[in-house]
Image 1 (cartoon, rainbow, N blue to C red):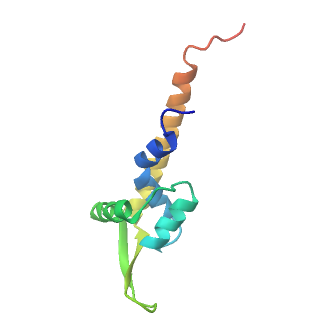
Image 2: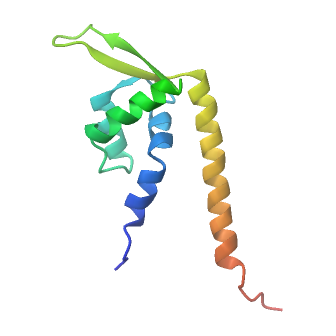
Image 3: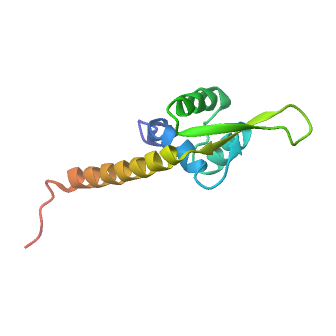
Length: 115
């Protein structure tokens, strides 16, 4: 049994990147974002975490929103990725790949190579 919930630890660290990835090809409202993220490996995401994060991403000009009034019921914000957000997602993906390589390098640093 693992002592640390690595999935939860890593999910917290990449939550911003995950939101950007979830908006990469489709605009989504908050509830849909929560549902999509839960289906794709972020089971603990909740609105109380997501909405403040969306506000921060909006302040950083990584996402934008428009009001959807086309459905019955109250209007809701529909979020989409900006071009700056797209570039940031690309940088985040590169950093993630570099970190994976660094971990593999550390794990194998002292491994004896058979002759």
